[in-house]
Amino acid sequence: MKKNKANKNTSGNIAQNKKARHDYFLEDKFEAGLELQGWEIKSIRAGKVNITDAYIIIQNAEAYLVGCRISPLNQASTHVIAAPERARKLLLNKREIDRLMGARDRQGYSIVATSMYWKKCWVKLEIHLAKGKHAHDKRDTLKDKDWQRQKERMMKHSV
Image (cartoon, rainbow, N blue to C red; front, side, top):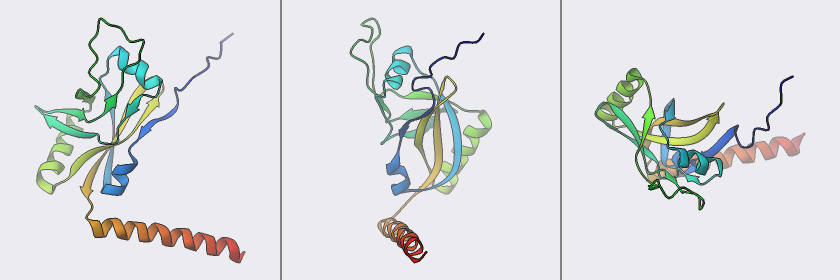
């Protein structure tokens, strides 16, 4: 008989970057794996990760996650020096990296991290090609959201 393992925090979102949806027009979506160390996985399982200011840089045809903070646990090993904000390599295909590089260089896009989640036992990062919003774009987005809420309220009360 198979034993059912209790999957504690092994499904669903780990962290989200809500600020990215506010500051950028998000377009193409990519899924990337992360090259992590053992202490980082333990900290992620404990929920000590922040991707609010995270973005992706491309150097020497390799993609790196910058600005992601993974805080070490108190019980972490003293043999390993923990660097909470180090650049972490992203695992992407060459074709995907070329596409990201081309869009960033030619069309003025940024590459931002929007969410970190579990996929089976692997940590995955959702990244988007994004164009920055101006102040008036942000106001328009807020107006549209507000109008959608008002429409839903009116429909709910009219029934």
